[in-house]
Length: 214
Image (tube, rainbow, N blue to C red; front, side):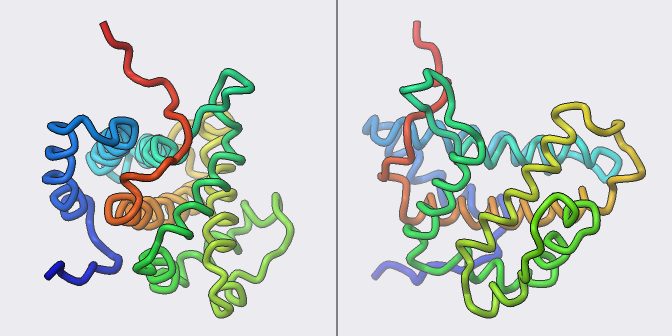
């Protein structure tokens, strides 16, 4: 009998141990190559994020965002380039929600309700978005909307760092960066569980920048 799936939270080491035997068997059979690459990339960036200390919060966040986008990005054949980040993230959240048969993401967001609400109400982020009652969305169990809007706010924090909109290790953005980093970590680990438990054989869109062969 297959053991009952574990709900969040699981840490990165536990998730990696769950994936390893499947990864090895799929590699031997040459199955699900694109999704194995997505997961390999995501794990590599999350491992880098874990090695960053408190003084390296900027580096940690950039690595966490790379891990999420390793899973979420998809190739747009029409553009001949990766799909726009916001488009890819929205599609990813919808697919994760549809694939999450165990309710891992809702369990995570409900457990982390205070953290989620702090991201929505952060004074730096709130001025860039329309007011949203995150508490009401959680109570109505609109977890797909909560996840999508939370990631939109996390994306803004990433853009500030990646586009040089802040000083490295600036004291001014430590609070919003810490909140966003924690929220991003919780969601990405939950999404990894969904991907590994139920989505590894699914089509998550074309892989961006597949490894060059030969």
